[in-house]
Amino acid sequence: MTDDLLHRIDDTLRRATDSGALQPIRTEQTHVRDAGFDFTVRWVSTLALKDAARVNEAVRRDPTFNPFLPPDPQLTVGPLGERHLAVLNKFPVIERHLLIVTRAFEEQCAPLTLADFDALAIVMRKHGGLGFYNGGPDAGASQRHKHLQWIPGSGEGTKLDPFTRALPTGTGPIVHPALPWRQCFVRIRPHFGGAAMLSAFEAGCRALGIDSAADPMPPYNFLATLDWMVVIPRSCERHHEISVNALGFAGSLFVRHPEQIDTVRDIGPLSLLTAVAQA
Image 1 (cartoon, helix red, strand yellow):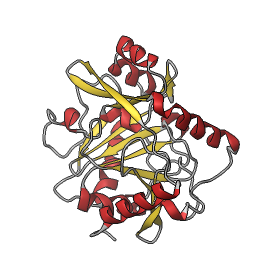
Image 2 (tube, rainbow, N blue to C red):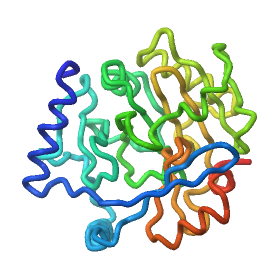
Image 3 (spheres, rainbow, N blue to C red):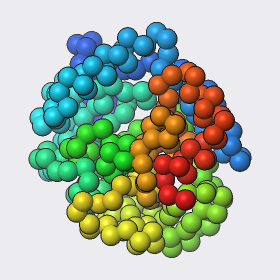
Image 4 (tube, rainbow, N blue to C red):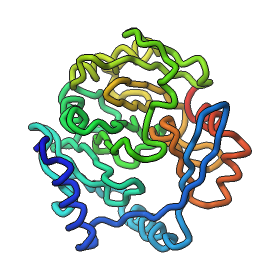
C-alpha cells in the first residue's frame, strides 16, 4: 500500500467526510515565541464549539468503548504489515492525521515492538512527516488500545527541525542543552527503517534510565522524523488545565478555550512543557 498511501488517505478522507464518519475540529491558531523557539497554539474556534461539545459527549457516553476493535471501516485506510492498520483520526485537528493501530488489542502502556516501528516506517520511509507516540494517559493518550500516530510534516508545529538544527550529527544519545526538561535525541539516518527507529528508541530510553521492555512502561512520549528520534519521560498529562501530548514537544500546543492562550504566554511554553515532563 506504500506507493499510493497518500491517495488512499485522501480517498478515505473524502468518503468519510461525505458520510459524516470523519468530523474535523476547526481551529484557529496563534504563535508564541519562547527562548528562541516558536510554538503554534491552536484553539477551538467559535464556529467549532458545537463540534467540540459533540466530541466530548461521545467520549463521555461510554468510557469503555474501544474505537479500534474493530476500527470504523469508513475511517480505515488499509493494512500496514500483518499486525497493524492505518486508520484516520475521527476528530482531526491536523489534516491527514493517521493512527497506526494494532489489529489485536494491546495496551498503550505495553512495550513498543519491532512490528510497531516497522508499521510506522512503512508510512515514513515514503512520505516523511512526523511519527509520535503518547505512552499512557499521563503522556496524553486518550485510548488504551495501542496506536502510534503520524502526521505530514508540512504544517506548523509538526516538525522537529527547530529543536534539532543545532544538534551535532553524531550517532550517540544527545541531551539538548537549551531544553529544560529531561529528553534524549538519537540520530536515525543513514539507515532509516523500523529496526533503526527501535534501536534509537532503546538508546534514548537507556540514556534516560527507562527500561524499554517494562510492562507497563512508565509514561513517556517519543517523536520521530527520518533523521531523529527524541524520547521524553512524562510526569503528568496537564498543567494549569492545559493538556499536552507528544506534539507539544514538536512545538504544537492545543487549548480548549481562547483565554488559555494568555495562560500559555504567561507561563511560557517551555515552562509548560517542563511541568508535564520531568525537570
